[in-house]
Length: 145
Image (cartoon, rainbow, N blue to C red; front, side, top):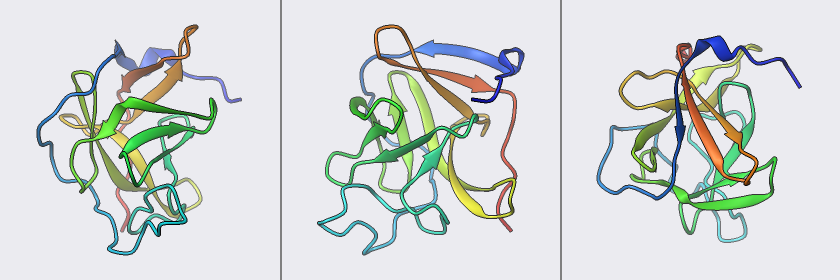
C-alpha cells in the first residue's frame, strides 16, 4: 500500500446519513450500462467500467439498484453513501461529491470521486468501526482530453 500524504488533506468528515436533493452534473450513465445481471453502474467514458477510484486509487462501485457505494476493500455496501442524481452526484451525510472522468497516470480515462464545490479528490478510508470516513484533499484531477 502506498504511503499517504495526510498533509494534503483539508477536511476530515466522519459522515453518517444520506442527504437528499440535487447536486451538480457528473459524467452520466450509458442507457444500457447496467444490465440486470451486472450489479454495478458502468460509467460512460470510464476505461475501468464500473470502478470509481478515490485519491489513493482505492476502488469503489455504485449498485445499479440502490445507487449506493460498494467498497471493494471491505466487501460491503454503504446505504448511507449514495447517488443523489443519475448524472453522478453523490451524497454522504452533509458532503456533496460527484463522479467525473479524469486522466489516470497511464493516460487512460477513469472515473474518480471529487468534492462538489472544489472539484478536489476525496480519499475514503475505513475507521475502526468499519465506517467510511471521507477526507477532501487539495489535489484536483486532470480532465480527460
